Length: 314
Image 1: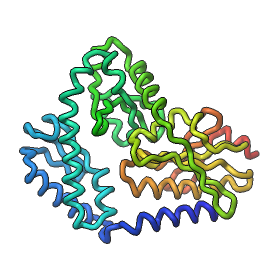
Image 2: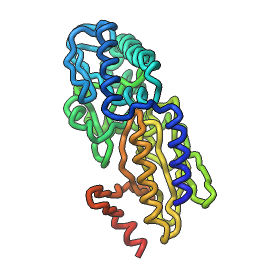
Image 3: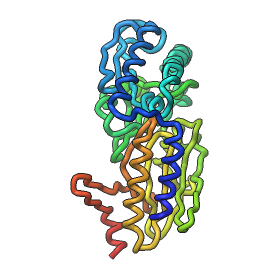
Image 4: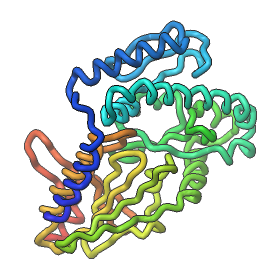
């Protein structure tokens, strides 16, 4: 579709203006080199280095995180790779500075987590990519009913989301499902963003639900009914490429649906690859309140639409 192609080109140009020349393995090697240097300078002490896999574990007392904390690097790398190398030290120092501030906030707020009633105002649900499910399954209160992403109950500290141990559900005498439900209500009720529509020359409309300040905006995927989501007779394509953006396109006439799906997949994959804070490169079809995945077998190139949509196209 020409409109989606134009939209892709616009995003590409915006991203490319800040892109760093190195985009391959050497770029990540330079990033790791800088991280290791900063970790030493900032006094993290002994660590378990898994930086090649995208994280490291902190093994000694330090000003930034608790002992045995896992510090993920993928989102930070996504930010750095779009900037000049000269800016990397400042970006990385800013990242670790946020961790330090968050730890200080935790000292004040953690006592309030002992009782459910005082903890409730701080509970939110944040989205994570499916690839990280194994890491969170045993330690966190999660909702894993979706395909391509899952929700984690977190503590909404002023400086950003912090982990909530799965043991709190038992402490509060609540089921994990009830904790997820209440945290979702908190999150959705405070997400005030709505879709903004962009109209291109061909008449196709692409809508974005996004925010530069709300780290939970993507959690609106659980309830799009109040978000002015574009709709049509054939439903809506939905993508959640990162934690700050939901993308939607109302499916056009029957003859144009297949082409729109293919182009929309390209758009979501591009936004997912750019990051930061990646969630999913999957594409979904929404009809009414039902969200169904559109399966894409990359090895064969075969796209499988939801059965209900296929029936509507006959």
